[in-house]
Image 1 (tube, rainbow, N blue to C red):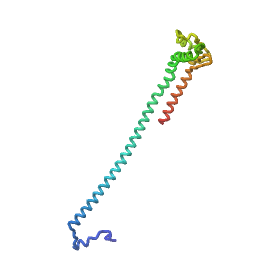
Image 2 (image 1 turned 135 degrees about the vertical axis):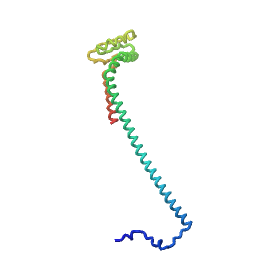
Image 3 (image 1 turned 120 degrees about the vertical axis):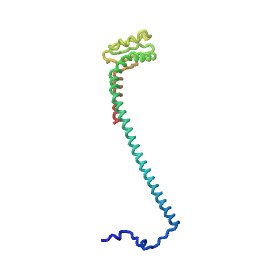
Image 4 (image 1 turned 45 degrees about the vertical axis):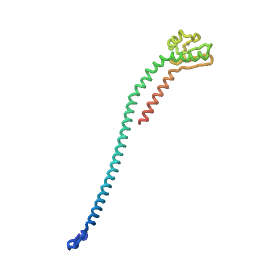
Length: 195
């Protein structure tokens, strides 16, 4: 079987059929070839630019994801390292500070009550172990109608101040529990947000 039908036939050229080409037709062919080449180059440049933009976009997205992941890792590490310190402070340091500040807090409350209940006696009911710390705060003051009473029904750090119909309560254990709950809740929220 012959493949001659697949090949181009150059018989006319071989037989000397003249092909006429003028300077104008040659210039037109060059111009068409130039335009075709220019368009192909332009199309390649546009395609290359779109590929570059796509590559830059993908790389930027990956870098942003890496930064976000790195930020989350850093945040998680900070929260994990600070949490034990804060919990330790809430459990050990804060109770001591609260206990030391109890007489000052009582003095503030007594001063407010003394102004509003001018002539009525004021009783401070406190845990018997807290009485020695409270008494000196009131010595030498003009609160002569104030008496500090040790009350076995009250836990350490809890104080009830009574004058007439008015009663105020200072509850350090409850305050410390609330602070502990707030700190625990904060770290739980941080862990959940990070995860």
